[in-house]
Image (cartoon, rainbow, N blue to C red):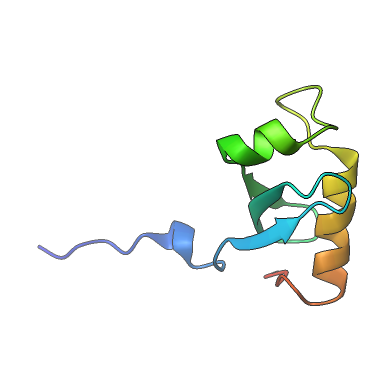
Length: 78
């Protein structure tokens, strides 16, 4: 019997992105321009001033992620 490879890890690592407004740092992976995975930690949640809805993304952080993708700081896998 062979072990099946975990394909969830094939689209790239989570990389740190820091919000310019509150300095919260989250881990991010962009599988495409439309899909972004964000991993929050307790410290980032406490620091974020724009996270009113826990199921949404802070607009300032969203902007920082977009900028990181555009300047190559994080890879967009596509």
